[in-house]
Amino acid sequence: MSGTNVARGSNLALTQTSVAVTAQLIRAPGTLNALTGPAPKQADAEKTIKQQTSAEMPFVRITDLSTDPKGDKVTVDAFNVTGGKPIMGDRNAEGQGKKLSSSSFDMVIDLATFNVDAGGKMSRQRTRHELRRIARAEVQAYFPRLVWQRALVQMAGARGQQTGVSWDVPLESDPDYAEIMINTVKAPTYNRHLVVNSTSFSKGGAQLASIATGDKWKLSNLDNLALMLESAETQLPPPRMVGDEQAYDAPIKGILMLSPGSYNDLITDMTAGNNLRSFLSAVVDRQKWAKDSPVFRGECGIWRGLLVKKMNHSIHFLASTTTKHITAANKLTATETDVTIAAGLSTTHKVERAVLLGAQALARAEGASNSGVQAAIIENTYNAGRNFEYLGEFMGGETKFRFKFPNEAGDAEPTDNGIYVIDAATPIV
Image (cartoon, rainbow, N blue to C red; front, side, top):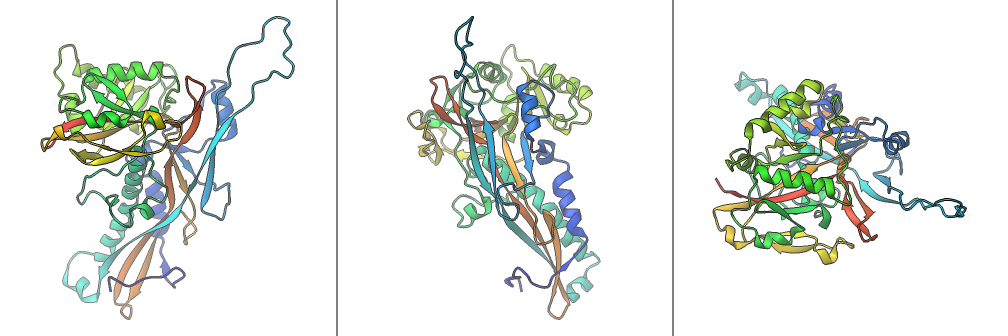
């Protein structure tokens, strides 16, 4: 019966756990919801322009499909910052106003379904475990994990090559990969892609062809990254977390999400002058001012205004394999081409991709599933009512905030608004 297709519109019993799984997805503890805030309204944007208080979270949750409330598409808009020379003295100012400019992108949502078979009557008779309750719990835990993994892949601009039971999103080679990701996974824009090059960084992914085993994370890299963020022409919007009382007095420059190997390289860096104790104690001090902000909890540290957190999943690439990148020549068109990871990494090292998050990095759009809420668990019986299966469903989609912003030459350059991706070498263990 595992191949049975339960079609849309079937007479399935909607259980009360539908609301429970929606609450789990929206409020469950973890990285996904710790970084998520509501979609800003026009008044919020105006407050930001006026430098008034407005929470700026890395993930923006959108539940109003304004393009078509009954459809599957939402349009996200952004107005560019207006500036330039003032008009001095008695010079004529009439008709000399600067034009407002904006850019936008569309994203779509789709229905994802996952089901667990709770077995037949005799299977339930032979065990002391309540298989129906276990099946419901498995479905309820599945979707927060799936949505986080889709979000991570969208932010990183690639699925990578890590496999195993911890991944529910398949590899890019899987025929269902594009459909599962819903919105097209886009390689990082040229101005938001960095590769560790000794203690500094190279802009753009072309450096991956020359990355070496020594190009791993060090605390000194954080010094250079902090300086780079401060001097960038198109700056990363600083994340301001709900519950952080120091969000404006001592703003966080960005949230650096490192996979386990890269995080280990960072905290075991024994280079002279690097003070691991300061790295760890700074986040303890920040927790006193951000008691209601879960993003400062767990295994993390702060250095030069950068919050560094370890994540469970790894977006990594092996030596001599390819991934997509945008060259300097294609930065205004965002045309993607392949880059081959340096063969010099051999079988001892791999490239791990970190994501640095600012405000408004990723859009999470949600719609109503068949149950009338974003997520649901549906109980179905078959085989004359003796077998049970539980189908979970979630209506949503994720994509990066990408706009065209004027660069230092005045050209409109595609820019991943709140995300940098940073590649580094790390040993294979």
